[in-house]
Image (cartoon, rainbow, N blue to C red; front, side):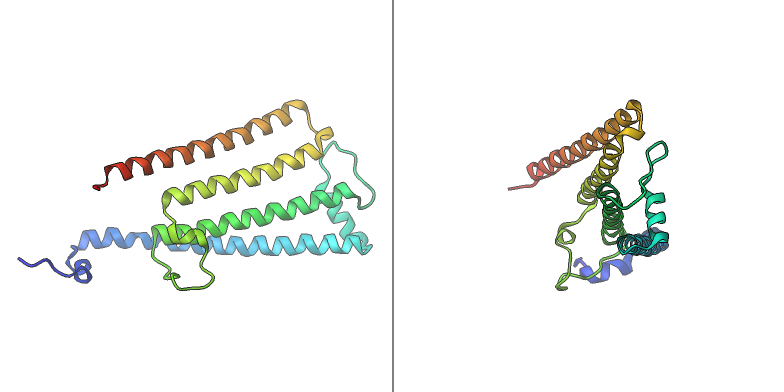
Length: 203
């Protein structure tokens, strides 16, 4: 009996397999929701940037908003825009950007991996990592993004170290270290799995 063409294989699936396979589209509203969350982060970024520029230009309301945002409870509240305040605001903006990058990886990589192909093979703006994305690559990249976000928060804690107890600083450092070792464990596990798959392939 001749083997049917590959293009005709999906039509040979029964109702239940087709229903199960089509259930992947239930994730579409989740990715659309993440796009809305991305819009919220973009709006928040521009609000914070506008207040920073306004504070630099001497706007009192923008200065108060900036000071409210960066002042840690228990720390001495600055009365003007200084280098430390600007650094904390910029770190907050970088934090928003890194979370936004994380959202992009989840939206594009997750959709490409678990829902449907995007068909970007010939697109000039196709992300370099998308050409070889899979669940393992996406997992590793997400872990690295989380480490970057954790690093920003830990740096902000170190800048305001005087407002925190030693227990809080040590706890945040330990949590960041756990994130780091978790990412290394994920990368090492993926390396072992890839090596095992390559060894099992016929030469």
